[in-house]
Length: 293
Length: 129
Image (tube, rainbow over all chains, first blue to last red):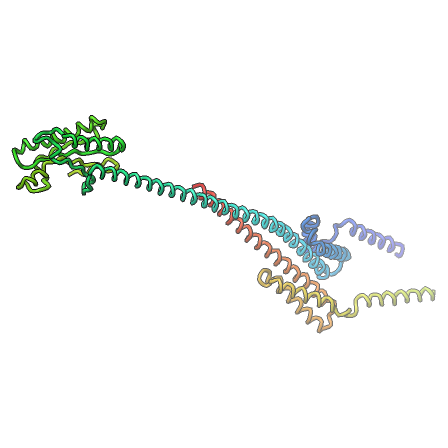
């Protein structure tokens, strides 16, 4: 009997040993989880920078948990160590994440500062161009003002010249009236003084090319209407002829006979009638516009 | 035979006493661990972990309370384990809170940058008119 027991027990012992060596090392879910987290961050440079201490703690607790597991220690004790290992590994991991975010923050701050600078210089450039625009605007306004002043000056000069021609300011503009005495009696021919006046007007018109004139003939109410109409037209035309002879283009001179119409005085007495026999030269404004009757 | 018998006894006594030393006794009071766990929890509270990691912070606080009860029953070893876990929980709550705050900060920055970009582009488009 005895001789058999020994080999048997030896066999059992050996087989137990074999089983122990051949079988996979014991497993625990929490230990495995802790190991996986640890291995995933073990070589992370961000973790190395800021989570080195908890990473080392995790390693120590993980090794301790492994040992306890292999020694067949109670589950709750193994899991306590694994819990600490996992906790420290997670602390290291999240600190590594924070380190990465911190770097993002740094570069974002740099970008923000660059953009701020860009914005400032853009604003400066805009202010500069606004100032430049305002300056050229002011310059233009000044030029316009100067031009307007020159024009006004010019106009004043022209008005002065027209006044020297004996033109009168009326509600139709400047009007030069050639009285009856400047014409031969009942004739259309202009007399010397009349010719001189019209020649001066021609000089004025040649100097100021935008000016036009309307020559209007009028008579008193003596004689037939038809005759008066015709006389008024001929006298107006005579004035136009003098203007054209002195170099004024035909299209700048309009001619109109009004006959007995538009008397300026009573036809009942000689002096009134004499005032009604006249030629009025209506001078256009500086742009060639003439108020029509 | 006698000496052999003695030798066996000696071994037995030694073995037993070693076993007793290993398992018996409450062990020292974990004063240092208590201190560490408490300051880790205070640090997490100061970090505003209550807002970002309330569950993890609560877990740490509960374990601290459990450890205090265990100490009253002189369960020093078990109390130490609770305190170690409470410390890890509190530190993890802190770390996650800080990471989350950094994430919020970077998002805020990126929004600012985006808004500035849009303004610059808008001004350039407006400036070309």
